[in-house]
Structures are given as C-alpha cells and as structure tokens.
Image (cartoon, rainbow, N blue to C red; front, side, top):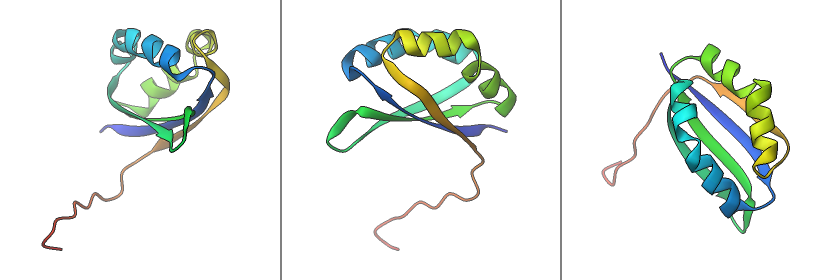
Length: 99
C-alpha cells in the first residue's frame, strides 16, 4: 500500500533547486518514490510544497530522514529543515460537471 508524503520547505533559489531536484530523480525513485507534484505558494516561488507518493512509509522515512538526504537538501538551496507529513489517503472524490 502506498502512502503520501507532504514536504514543505523554503528554497533560496527555486530554479536552481528545481534543476538539482530533477537531476536527483533516480535516487528518489530507487528509494521508493513513485510520483511527485511540486507546488509553490501563489506569489512566493521559493515557498515550496512537494507531494510525493512512496511505496512504503518505512522507505520514505528512511530516505527523507537520512543524513545524506538532509545534507543534499541544504547543499541544493533548501533553507532550514523541511516540514514533513506522512499521510494515508482516506477517500478520493472526483468531481464532474454532473455533480
């Protein structure tokens, strides 16, 4: 069963962070990440929230809490510690014009 991870953090330079994030895709996938969505707060490009899907919570925690990952984040424009939430989907509702 997959789980979702919501990770919020500030970056010093979104474009540079995004380039580094895209370059590291293989490492994230190898660690169990299945998909991601990247959001920014409207009007504040450097205020980033990443919504990830992982194959297990254990693998997500192991990767995201690893010293190597935290060091990589700080070396690639993440400011401060990320705020991470591990979530289980309770219900999914898809709205249509017929609703």
